[in-house]
Image (cartoon, rainbow, N blue to C red):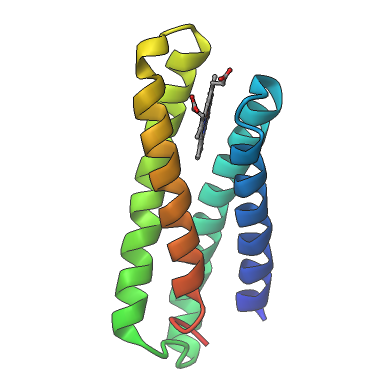
Length: 126
Ligand code: HEM
């Protein structure tokens, strides 16, 4: 049951992330959307971390341990990248134009990794 709730949240987060990148030229919408997405995604990781231990003990949810390892590594890297996005995004907001290239490069990388995290979540657990 909780898996479905996590997957619904994850789907909404991915949609929000794509919307935020689509609106990258509109600062106000871009920044608000990205803050919401990042906070929600970190809360999702925490929800999964806090409940999964208990679920694991109660049932055999792990379908493919190798895929789960890849999935967890992607998810943790994405969270690290979120902090880089907050840092470079804030600098850009304050007018440090020279950081634009890094923000853009890290942004597309973050989006790619988040999509891969999403894809690998199906099949990692049942
Ligand atoms: C995962 C999170 C994020 C992604 C994927 C992302 C991605 C992007 C991308 C691709 C651009 C376009 C760069 C260009 O073409 O020049 C951009 C612009 C920008 N981003 Fe982000 N961003 C994220 C988070 C943030 C955050 C948290 C902030 C602020 C705190 C921020 C502030 C900005 C600003 C100010 C611009 C420039 C907008 C303009 O051209 O006026 N971003 N972002």
